[in-house]
Each structure stands twice: as structure tokens, then as C-alpha cells.
Length: 573
Image (cartoon, rainbow, N blue to C red):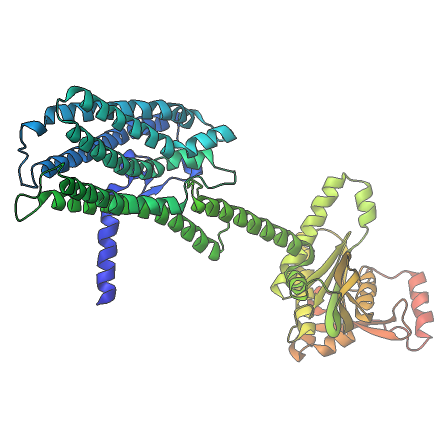
């Protein structure tokens, strides 16, 4: 039940908020919220000029109407005070109402404040109309736009001074009544200035969003504390001071005592307190809630992974500093993610994550892995006869195929070395069957390279225990694998370039994989690899076996000599 009532209250507040927001009235906002600087810059000059004219016209009418209404309320309160609080505007001949004079003075004072406001605002609106996307505001312009609410308050106060001056010169009443009107107009001026300040601060947000874009808010010009003071002044201080002055005047005999059982002057002051308080609370709520809502939306978008969103900086209080700080923090996060992405591209996602977890320590461990070494044949001669850019295109195509296949099989490309690639299965992320993953990747990679890239290449697959970890100095290190399996895969790659198949694997790798994978490989050779003391049995994928060229006499004799040495070579039948 409580939740339903709260939801209903929120809907009512949103309905009132959408119809009383300064931005929606002036036409520079959307959905009750300020437009962002990027959205405003996308508007053409004519549209911005239309918004500016509408803003000055409608805003001036609203402020002028509120000023006159506040003046009438205040003067009626003075009349009710001087007639004893009766529910009529009749007073004795010493206190003639002269309502026509009051209205004339209020209109003249309002026109004065409107003209002064236009003088203050015109340069800023001209800049708003003509500013381009590559023309950031200078410090003088930013300070002038942030000072708009304060300057409009000065213009409003000047208008009230003119209104009272006109009334005092034209009216012919006793000095005590003139002083009472002066006090009432002073309190009205305070209320009007507070409302003008809050209205102007909200309505000027589009200008502030453009002026403050791309800059930090170093200081607070209109703080949250000042806004709370405004709430207290309008809703409490002004009506209470009026009530105190009325009772003091009655006690001193300057104004007549209450004539009836109901003091309508007191009730009117209470009514003014309620209505003025509601208006100022609504404006202060918008001044504080809107920046917080904007930042909340951006934070939620960031939590969802969108680091492109930024909040428009338009507030001159501590919230504006928070808006600029949030954007700066998001810029740092975006830069960090960009650097992390670049880092991951260079070393791989697994190594990047491992480096972050280990905080860059030089650590490692012994582990069983499968290793693939794939190398292009004759790349040096290929590059010598071509433009380096053509060579780069070919190598990029080669490595792209390698990267796609390795990614599908859960491998890790440890490094690209010129025209070769070293691929590891089982480190840094462990795999359930690294030999199986490596052999299936080698078969698929061999088929794709043969089909898509008309180059000669060789690939070797080995399995064994290696050291996997960070190698180097604290100022410069890299993740790599060191062990006999790495060397064996490189030697098998060299043999595959001239062997029965472009893909060779050691018997140890075949035996380490699952049985269904070993059935897809066939033993084709047995050799003592360079740098090793014992012979290695070599297998090749059944689907990638090639018929060798007819042997020459010299090769046959060489094979016969090798057959005379047991344990060195077994030729495919």
C-alpha cells in the first residue's frame, strides 16, 4: 500500500514538474531536462535563434508576471494590515489605497528590470546563436554565463527600487504608510529576487552547457548552501518578518489593531508563505535533482559498459564540480580501457588479465602445454621483390587466419615473429586436453591456409613440460614459454616445409591427445631433429598428406645410406 501511494505521489510530482520546468517553458530543454552540449551544437543557427527569442520573450513574460503578482500580494497585505485585518480593501482617508498608482509603479519597475535583464542577456544569447562546435568559450565568457542568475537578481532588485521610488513620489499618504510600503516592497523584492535567481539558473542551463563544455569547473559560484538559504528566506523568513513587523506596528500604534475575530492580514501572509514556499521548493528541487539524475543515468550507462556517455556541465554549485569531475573520471576510464584493449591486442586477453592479477610481478610456473609453430617458407625472398606494404598485407592475411582458428580452439598466440607465429595451448589459461585442442587446431589451420593463402609454409606441433610466465626485467618483460616442446615444434615446422605434409606433429603430442584425434594422424617419418640426441617419430594429418615429387638418384642413394644407420629414419612406404 505504501509503495502504491509513493508511486502515485511520484507521478503527480512528475506531471507538475514537466509543466512548470523553466527549460520546457522556454523551449531549450527536452523531457524536462537540459539538452547536452553535443545536441545543442547540432542545431542550426536559425533554430538556435528561434530558441533564444522564445526564451527571452516567454521568460520575460513569466518573470514580469510573477513580479507583478508578488507586488500585488504584498500591497494587499499592507492594506489589510492598515484596515485592521478586515476582508475588504477599505481604509481611512490617511491610508488611501491608490491601487492604480501601485499597478503603474509595479509595471514601470517591471519594465525597468526586464530591460536591464535584456541588456545583461543579449551578449550571451548572441554568443549562443553563433558559437560553433570548435569554438570553446573563454574564461570571460564562462564567468559571464555562470553569473547570469546573479545579474538578473540585480536587475530585479533595481526594478523594485524604481517601482517604490515611483510610488513614493506619486502617492500622497502619511509617512508611516510610505515606510510600511517600503518594507513590504523590500520583502517582496527579496522573494522575487530569490525566485528569479532559481528560475534564471535553471533556464540558463543550455548556455552554461555550451560555455562549460570541455572545461573543468574550478570554483563554486552558486552553492547548494545558498539554495537552501533561498528556500528558508522565501518560505519562512520573509512572511515571518512581515508578521513580526505587523504586530510591532500594532503594538506601537502605527497601524490599527485587529478589528474582527479573524485577522485576514495574518491569513494572507500565511497563504503567501505557502505558495511562495511551494514555488521555491520546486525550483530548488529541480536545481538539485536534475544534475543528480543526469549523473545517475551516465553512471548506470557506464555500469552497463557504455563509456561514451558524458553528462552536460551546467551547474554553478558543487554539483557542477561533481559533473565535471564525473566526466574527467569517465575520460580516465575510457583511456584506461583503450590502453587495456591495446595491451590485450599485443599480448592477448589471458596474459593481460594475468598481468593485472599478478600486479606485474616476474612470476611463472612449470606446466604441460601443446605448442604450435607455424612459419612461412621463403618469406625473405618474397619480401625482397615486393613493396613492403604488399608484404605487410600478405602477412596480415596469414596471421588473421591463424588468429581466427586459434581463438576457436582456445589457444593463445604467444607472439608473432616476423613471418612466424608461436601458439600455446594450456597456458596462461589451462585446458582440459591441450594436445587435443592443438592437434585439431593444426588440422583446421592447415586446411584453411592451403585453401585461402597461396603460400608455402610449415607447421609443427609438440607437447611437453615448459616454464610459462613473465621473463625479463621489472621495467620491461613479456609473457612467454620456455622448454624443449617449443624448440621441437620449431624444428618440426622446418621439416614440414619440405616433408610429406605441411603439418607435422610429434608422437608425444599424438599420444597425449584423445584416441579419436590420434586416428586422424598417420606416422610418416622418424628423424633426429637438430639439437636433439634421440629420434622423433613424426605424424601428419591424413587429410593433408601430399604425394612427393619423384625422387632423384642422389636422394635415393642418400636414403639408402640413412637406412644403413638404424634408428635414424623410416621412410613412408
